[in-house]
Amino acid sequence: MAAPDVIVQPWTSRDRLGDIMALVHAAFAGFEPPSSVLHETAGDLAARQRDGVVFVAMANGEFVGSVFCAVKDDALDLTRMATHPQWRRRGVGAALMRAAEREARARGLPKLLLRVRKSLPGNRAYFAKFGFVVTGEGQDPGRSPFDVMERRL
Ligand SMILES: CC(C)(COP(=O)(O)OP(=O)(O)OC[C@H]1O[C@@H](n2cnc3c(N)ncnc32)[C@H](O)[C@@H]1OP(=O)(O)O)[C@@H](O)C(=O)NCCC(=O)NCCS
View 1 (cartoon, rainbow, N blue to C red):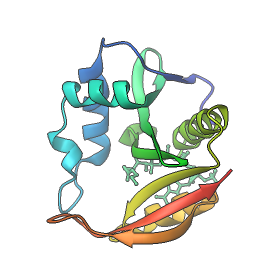
View 2 (cartoon, helix red, strand yellow):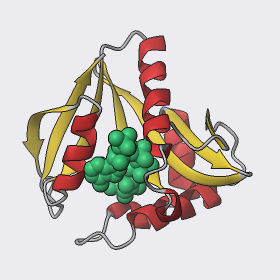
View 3 (tube, rainbow, N blue to C red):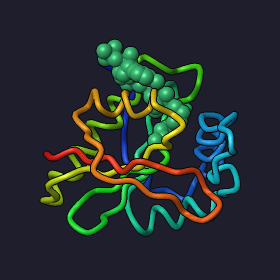
View 4 (cartoon, rainbow, N blue to C red):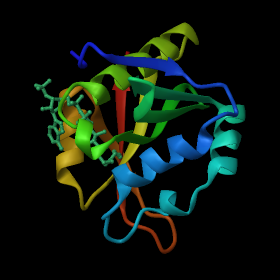
């Protein structure tokens, strides 16, 4: 379970988008090669709000986690799932995942979809714990190779 003081909710306001991006940047800092999310701004996040759902986890009014969701074919596609480094392993990621699952079910979508870098087997193991299985792979030009993982609901 997430720490009792953590609340997960969709964030539809245009306020505090910079704070959410700061959290995401903190979570993805140190990736090698660097994550492209480090170049994303509050404007990019506003576009994600328009195109899908941004879930945030909050504790005492601060952002401690987030995940971006968008409908892709018959799936809810999850990107940039992030827990602030100081809040790891306290169930924040699991709480975000439950929110994404509820969103997919509410939309009648039969599966969740995401990508994990092949260079981060820990992440693959993390999502496997939630029931995701590898269903494909790929690599965008100049980017890290990734596995596609899906979870049937
Ligand atoms: C991946 C990430 C979101 C996990 O968030 P989290 O809030 O620490 O995860 P949780 O606390 O909900 O963990 C849930 C379970 O997974 C386990 N777990 C957490 N991190 C793990 C890891 N790296 N590898 C394997 N298991 C892990 C926890 O111990 C917990 O297990 P339990 O319920 O049996 O105790 C976080 O580590 C992160 O922000 N990483 C950097 C960004 C990133 O890589 N995002 C994913 C992009 S695909």
